[in-house]
Image 1 (cartoon, one colour):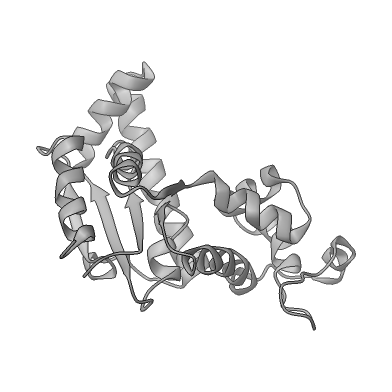
Image 2 (cartoon, rainbow, N blue to C red):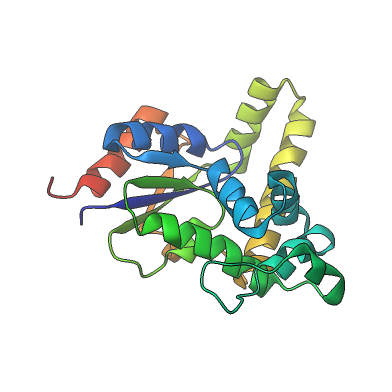
Length: 211
């Protein structure tokens, strides 16, 4: 296949961000990460910080975003802040609707490398999308986090474990996945041994197809 869009899922310390940026440069695509938050915030009429906190901290903050993600009468419009008080319950389905719509709208234009935000799940089944997971063993990832963040081995191991737990909760809460599986991706790259350059080359080969 020749990919018009690449999604890169990554675990803490796996160096997925570096792979994603190198992919974007190699393909001449736009690298997209925080932009998803900014676009969702713009659509919803809230601050990017609110969207980011909602994505990572669950019901208390995400219910604000959920209220804004309810599809209104006119396509492309979103509910106003006045609706927040009227919603007693957090709706992860509504939050997913907002983020997935933002991702899909940009993906339709092509020429994008999405990093994180469950883009692989949001774009499942869309033609021309290559879904990639960049991972590594917990021990290797913790070693990198310790070295790059100036943490002790114990602190780094906890940071990796906490990140993995948060990741699992995100996929369960937002995308209703009991478990994130390799089959959710078209290509899984392990950076335990592969360098960023080698991992990028493998993904580029798959993304370029017959080009």
